[in-house]
Amino acid sequence: MTGALNGITLIKMAIGGLYTLVLDTQNRLYAWGIVATVAGTTYPSTVSTQLGIGNGVGGTYATTPTALPMTVFGGKTITDMSVTAANAFVMTSDGTIYSFGDNTYSLV
Image (cartoon, rainbow, N blue to C red; front, side, top):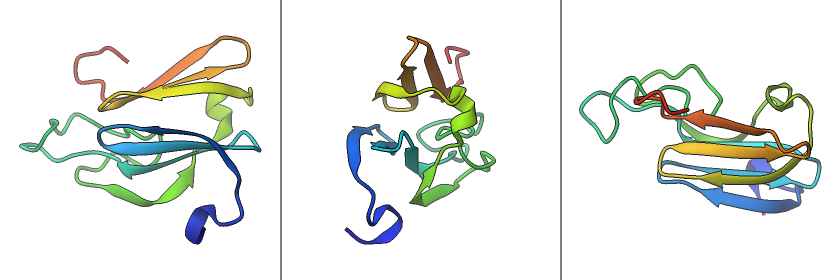
């Protein structure tokens, strides 16, 4: 493997409609894909920071896998993850579930 994940051992992958998440053996979660969309496209411009990275500027894409800050998950071990077309859910070792993504309908 070459690029940003070169030399990293991955143990889980979740592919959403607009982005991808992977988890490595060191409990680091990486994300890439669309960060936010522009009005008039698949999702309205209120969709921001779907990946948990970046600033949510419309039409922004993360083409390189980027590690999410583990402080978001309280430094806990990630045990599972799942994605939908525009949302992600991460479960930690204490059973806490974190979610991020499209909050157009205030469901995240």
